[in-house]
Length: 199
Length: 273
Image (tube, rainbow over all chains, first blue to last red; front, side):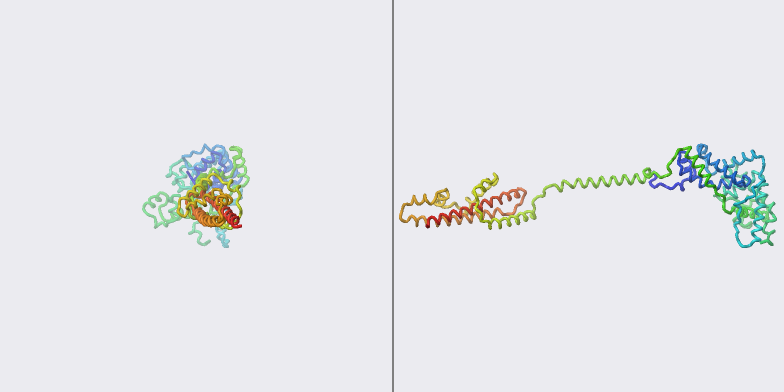
């Protein structure tokens, strides 16, 4: 028996889901705060940078958690489970649209440069690289793209990605490597050796 | 997160890789140039997406809260403190402490209600009180009426008889002379005068009266001694009650002393004149 009641912030995702299933509103709030931003940005990357669509997908995903908490398998990791649900939602959207990522709403509001030095040339170079990077990422093989995004953007481990996509870790590693090599070849003009004059 | 080969590519240089890592990278890069290109893409990917992330709108959260309340009903967001095990344990401990304190208080009450045994300090108090009363009694010159004697209680009468026996048994408490005893039995001087019938009746009476006076003095002294003996300190609970009765007896003894001395004076005056 716990004598000192711990904060909900220290609870694991699985414990919070258990409390949420019994109607604990506070548990839901904690889960929302942990994953709302991550999922919103994931959908934003996966759904052609469409902010509105990303908000709707994020809302639909949490609505599913509220209405059907039993759909979460307690034996699995909640993180991998919620990402797998998000991935399936994106695939369904791809099928519905039947259009690969190519269109953008033109407002990359969150694509702000980290380097805010007074060097305008460097900022221009970085801005150009960023745009090209996004373009090539959209042109990439879909399976390679999602593995690359999961690993290098969302920060998931190879093991977690394998659980989300329900494939082996070796296959995940291979897909990430191929995506990285593809980008390296496509963005070779932005390599440091090639951009010495710009730095 | 467990470090994998991609973390190794970011953290190490090509010449720092061990054989295991090189074998793992062999399928994807064959030389240092390809290694560096992979490293560049990974680092720039982090830089591109290192900026502030999108945040969900407040309206989305409100809609979800309404959906939650609709699904599970209006649930209070507050913390039910009484369900906290720590609060329950604290309440139990407090209850035990209060019960123990109440038990100790109630168990101590009978001790306070018990009558304390007479100790020297209390007897000293009683002796002091008695002394005060003695002073009062000695200074009193009130004529005791028969009503005072009638107000005696039974215990006082019993003790008085004991005192009378005590006065009779001790040497200093010798019974008065037959002449005095006869006098004490209620004979008046007039009856003595009738018995004498001689010329020196008055002288005889005077002598007898003088004798009676000495006897009376002796008796008075005896009574004083008994009076003082009654003022001895009590040593037990019974003695408290005895003291109280003794005080009453002292009063009666003293009053009797006063009355007897007065009677003797009257007799003397009658004989003389």
